Length: 134
Image (cartoon, rainbow, N blue to C red; front, side):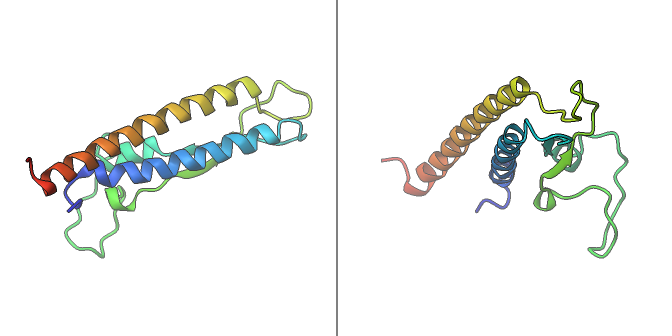
């Protein structure tokens, strides 16, 4: 039933990325005093844009499932955890900024709340269609 509904295919993947991002931010904060620690982040939106065709890359034409693809389909997208190798202002080499991490956690929480509301609205629409209007 959800096969053609792009929203219902993307939201669960986005929620997975948000969950991973929350764990990463917590991990970054926990390692604030660890010398040499480099903060980590989760990349999802850029991968999603690429899969939706909203990138500058030229999509290779494929007409056989065995052909190599340079742009993933929506079903193949997933988040990636990446290291932030930016320079640190601290002498110990740690590049975690507590204030930035806390703001990112709050932003992440807002995204989670918005996506859960959206999926609840979509499921409510399906419930209405299945149950009929009485």
